[in-house]
Length: 146
Image (cartoon, rainbow, N blue to C red; front, side):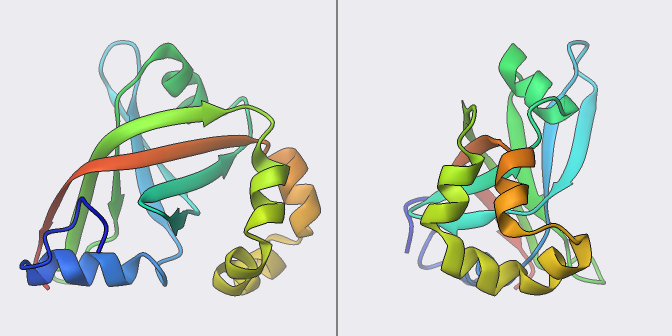
């Protein structure tokens, strides 16, 4: 299991399992005055890193360029259970979207096929429009309820 997950903690194990099937996570950045800004994002988990592709001029990317800290969390279960909140570090890769999506095409499409179809944009176009890659490397996980 990846380094941020405590293998003895069932909630951590449940959170790790969810990363392969959950479609949406919430990336929270902050405005200059400290006000939180949550944004729903598609994500891909690989080698201990969440990868998110984004349009380059979004508020979240502007916040991260400015040096905003970020957290990322999965949706909780209907009773507030299955909570997974990740604290970590981010790195921006301008013009990396197409390369990322080409590299991970098969597993990304397997995860998001229905969402890509509903969005109505071919993957190649998504790579051009969502050209900025956000890499979020978790350093801490808070999880409960599994």
